[in-house]
Image 1: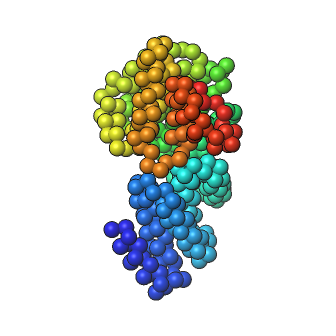
Image 2: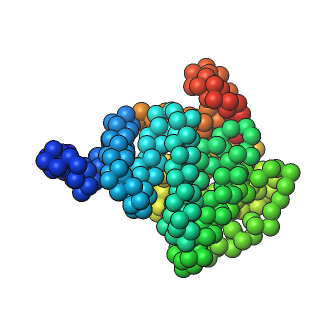
Image 3: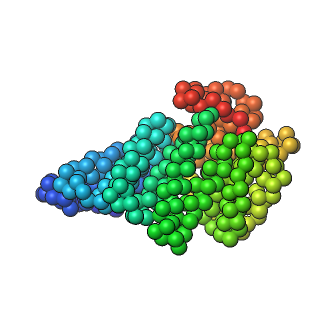
Length: 330
């Protein structure tokens, strides 16, 4: 279906290569195809399609340089290219693209400061940067991006205080800041986050990840009993159980990986620790599909390190070391 859409759009473009609508139609068809390739784990072709879509949007901007919707779409496409770069293992390229997208959004907000959609988009872009920066030993850069995300989504909430997506994003930024906070510091904000979660449940991955962020905050302060309590609360929740039952979804497997590594860190039983680390490896290897992402390699190294499997660790460690990522402990 998507390839037929592309063929149709290409014919339109050939007939009117300087027409704004025909340019945008072809751009959208490449975007759709890129999304399909991403779902099929064909990251190289996804990158190629998104890159072609971006090229066409730049062409369209020559015709309508002040079109706000087009500028927004351009930043969205840049973010998708960043996603493919990260899946291909090109972490620095992904970070550079996300910085480009965030700067474009900042520029747009100078002329449209009350645009909640732009503010939300900027917050999500900052959070993407924060997630990737968090793998480096110095968490300060990741923390600062999460702070920027909080400020952006706060502005969106002012414009639309009842928007549930904005609410979830706001508490996700708080939860992530708690996780990244220096271990010698504490924050009263953890109470606000837990109160929000208590009223929301765990019906989607954002809410689950908010709870996981709080659990990490507690572990980092050696509040292990509290961490175990909130982990158990999560695992026994019916919404959580239903949500992660579909193991064909990448986001569900990502949650299972995080949960198993948390369990490995919390348990004092050596055999149980090894079982949780092995479960992590099994989940990751089951869903490799050409994914060279740091989100896959980092927990994989953590699990192999936990099992004292030096040869496996060394096989996949070198590129991360080149990036300056050196800590692989649980």
